[in-house]
Image 1 (cartoon, chains in turn purple, green):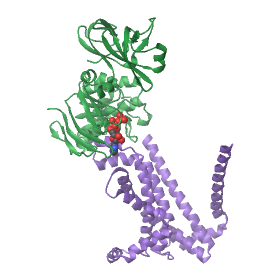
Image 2 (image 1 turned 90 degrees about the vertical axis):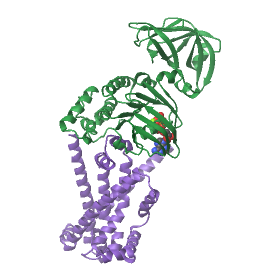
Image 3 (image 1 turned 180 degrees about the vertical axis):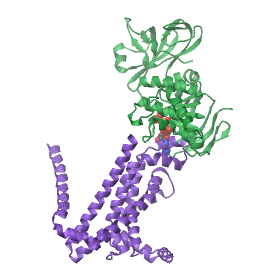
Image 4 (image 1 turned 45 degrees about the horizontal axis):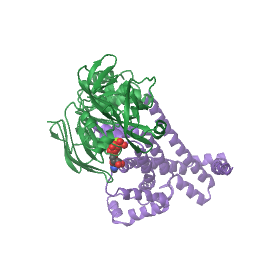
Length: 265
Length: 352
Ligand SMILES: Nc1ncnc2c1ncn2[C@@H]1O[C@H](COP(=O)(O)OP(=O)(O)OP(=O)(O)O)[C@@H](O)[C@H]1O
Ligand SMILES: [Mg+2]
């Protein structure tokens, strides 16, 4: 009897939460008037913000994957000096708020000799579009590297040993065996990297500054327009964010699905 | 010169050490490594393959020092218990995988793959994905993938453990033939003495990271040099002479005759093995399907866990049998009791 009611209790909580979340998301689409949304979409600001979001998030995703794959692989396959330190440092950004990460990056690039050196090379990160990418990169990489690590962990090392014994070097083995076997995990990581990058707000705001039509990405548009009391624009950018993320997921799934089919055939 | 020479090998894996392992394998030999779980059999195999850094010691292959050579340059291939077929490649590409690293034309690769596939009877499966194959088929693909590159040495880690007994038997005879046709030298880790009896001409016994005895199957099973090996192999041996071999083989041992389903040359001196658990005890004679029925006297009774180990005297021959406590009670087993033992002719193996 007790077990049954506990079971009902957990199911009830699960349903209740899902319902609330669903209601909240639906409200986003129901509250604004259609013409308000269309006006907002047509606005120059929205077009700018959407485009900048797509461009920066795509570049960040690419960079995150380029860094995440070696990091995930090294953590999963090799024992090296400082490995546990790398693991803990990668865990840090998940524990502390994005805003603080942004602040830390701002100080690193703005107030240190390292930042100064970059500056003198003509690389300006603070309050620039490059800053958006840097902020997105640092926010998304830890999450992504972790997912990639799990993907590699799930592949037995012995597949690689077999390939090595058949004459393949370390890198060839990685390319011909590990990478193809990790494919679905890497697709999932790419989606996560992209979704995290598009949605990054706090660290972008601090490092790149949320300046109108300059470093304005969708989350910044939402924030700026809320503060001006411009609800229509705010909601529209929210909807845009959701659409972008879902489209990304759909595209990636389609890509992966079609590859699967061709491999099977 | 031996093909493989392992000398004073030491490996430190933290909790586990390989200690002073020395081993030689002659060309075209078939060495099985046996020993309790955790003895370090798999580690030793992977060390030979080049997957672990070595603390001290030396490995030579065909006279060449390969101690520091990476696995891809050793020319040894490995077969694991759970197949390890590349799931993203079909059977053909799995088998051709190692060949593609060699300077071979497309036609040559195709021919090599077809040859080994026919040998292991997987030529109908070449277009399939590994996932769609049975365990026995997958392992044959894995063996084909390893053999097709004509390795200097084939390493197998319990290759038949994941298969049922029937499939095992089938694979044993296929492997035996393939290994001969490709004149391959083999190291085969196993828990199954059947593998030893039907495939090996050398055996090494490992315990706690050391090799405790190495020799021919007969030496290991008949002349164990330590109590550990004697206990571990724990099987019964007899030396005898083949009287006749038609549909059943009769072998005379002292003043008794033992029947086996295995074929042997009449007149030859042979060694037989019977597993202790294959021996059935009875107080009275009746009608049995077992061919071998002999009178015996219980000499010693030793309790080990839930079973009793009996030492029996069978017309001057010493034999070990194992029975459950229940059965012992039912039969009134104690030292000095006289009874009969029986075992099927198919339980008697000719091992040398
Ligand atoms: N990479 C490793 N690092 C540390 N210890 C290891 C490693 N690989 C194996 N060991 C340990 O070495 C010991 C021997 O392992 P091994 O797999 O060689 O045993 P085995 O004789 O093959 O046993 P089994 O018959 O169960 O396969 C075990 O205690 C195992 O936990
Ligand atoms: Mg093992």
